[in-house]
Length: 321
Image (cartoon, rainbow, N blue to C red; front, side, top):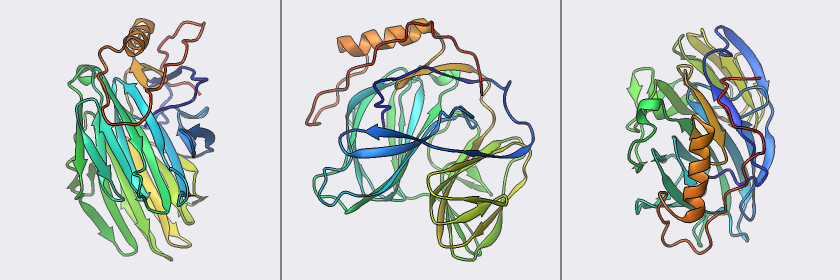
C-alpha cells in the first residue's frame, strides 16, 4: 500500500537513542489520511510520539467500511524501495499486482508480503465483485543495510501457524511467537501476530524482553497491560516485558507488533526508505522517468506521480519524539 498523501514530508526514524528500555504504556492516537478514491485510513506510524516499533515503521488501519455500492480500495501503481509491505485483512479482499509479474487475491487471514529491496512498484484494489465490508491493516518493515538492495519479490502464505490459549487464538503473521514460526521472510528479529480474544478472556501472552512492542486495536474492547484500548488506537509498550496481560470486555481483535529496536538511522519519504538525500532524489528521478521500478501490468489507471521534495535537506537523525 502507498502513502498517497500529496503533502508528503520526510520522517526521520531508526536508531536506538529514543528506544524506551523499560515497560511503558504510551497511547498513540491516529491521524486520518485519505487513501485512493473512497478509502480513509487511520495512520498510527509514523506518529508524532513514536516513529518505529522494532523494524515496523508504517501502520495504517482501515475500516470496517461498507463498500457494497462503492469501488472499494483503489491504489494506483506506485514505487517502493528499502522496505517490506504486509497486507492483512479481517474482512474483504484485495487484489495485488506488482512489477515482478505477481497477481494475487488476498483474503482475511492470509499473508501478502512484498519485499521491495532495491526497487519495485505495485497496485492494490478491491476486485470488481467484492464483499460488502473492507477491514484491515497495511504495514511496512524497514530493511536493514545488508538487505536493502536485495532482489524484489512477493510472497503469499494462505496457511499460517496458530498459538492458542483459553480465550485466545493468535495467528502468527511474521517472526516467532511462543515456539511458532511464520513462513514469511524476515530480515530482523521481530514478531507480528493477529490476536482474536473471546468475550471474558483473561490471558497472558509470552514476550521477548529484548523486543519493543506495540498493540493495535482492530475491533471490540480489550484491556492491554491494564489499559483500555478501542479500535483504531495503538498502545506502545516499550521493552523489558516477558509477558503481556490481555483481557477482553467483548470479542476483540488486536495486532501485536514487536521486534529488536532498529539500529540504523533512516529517511522515510513518500514510499521510499533511504539513508541519504541523494538516494531519495535518485528514486524520485527514476520513478518520474519510468526506470528502475518496473511496470505494473493490468491496472486500469495511471501510476501515481511522486510528490515534490521538501526545500529543507533530508537527513537521517534516528528516533525523535
